[in-house]
Image (cartoon, rainbow, N blue to C red; front, top):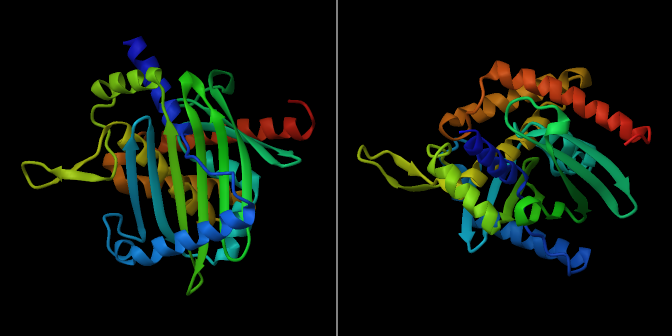
Amino acid sequence: MHKMIYLSKIFLFMVATAIFFFTGSASAVEVSRQGKDLLLDIYHENKARLEANSFGFPLFLESFELDDRIRVDVYGILDFPFRSVANVLNVPANWCDIVSLHPNVKACTYQKQLDGSLLTFYIGSKTYQPLEDTHQVISHYRSIDQAGYLDVTLNADTGPFGSKDIRMRFEALPLDGGKTFVHVRYAYSDSVVLRLVSKIYFATLGRGKVGFTVTGTDGNDGPVYIGGPRGAIERSAVRYYFAIQSFMNTLHYPEKSRFSMRTNEWYDLTTRYRKQLFDLDKKDYLTFKVKEHENQMTLQRRIGAGNQ
């Protein structure tokens, strides 16, 4: 039983840190132009899906599985002007406060580099863990913000157990009415070891875990949702989308109240989708996050003082 729990933690750790491939061969201007045009096309082609979907507000997702790569794309509309969104998400420190809303992210720190920033994620189980018991994943932060288009990437080329292309991408462009169309892409390339771990996990402890894609109907004409690794990465992608939304929604509160407000809002958003996203009672989640936030601030102060 202890071995099964250990294997499940390994798998959940990988899902929590998995992020998708971003092409870096073209120039920043070319990438910006191509990305903006493509994202605008996706918006126009999917207006109907944004207006009517199972989430109950402008949000939809697509996921794919091919060979060793699993990918999910989440698209939505934020009720904030593009410049407000871009100004917030152009700051690496804000990303640490965003991603740490995820139950598996126990802390995040940032360091400025000559060519960008480094973000370190401390990944663990959903319950509280001391940071020395977590796994560290170091990501390179890059941002393109020009001509009404934002493209943020977090790249970790390799990870544990042979995983690679562990990356995250966030895109945004302005819409009429002071709103912003956004895209979160999240995926990973696995390995033989990780495939074995996930197979064991979903045959045992994760058997009832599902995502959001409907694959059919049951005997009562109810929806049957995707399971397995695709379901897991869909859950994580939606959690990160809600983290961005919660961060933006609470910026108008006094700074001293924002952490409490965004953890409460994130929890309430995710528990609307109890079948997919419920893991912890609210009291436990909030208690763990208070301790983890204190650890994160302590780590960041040490980095600022040059004591790493």
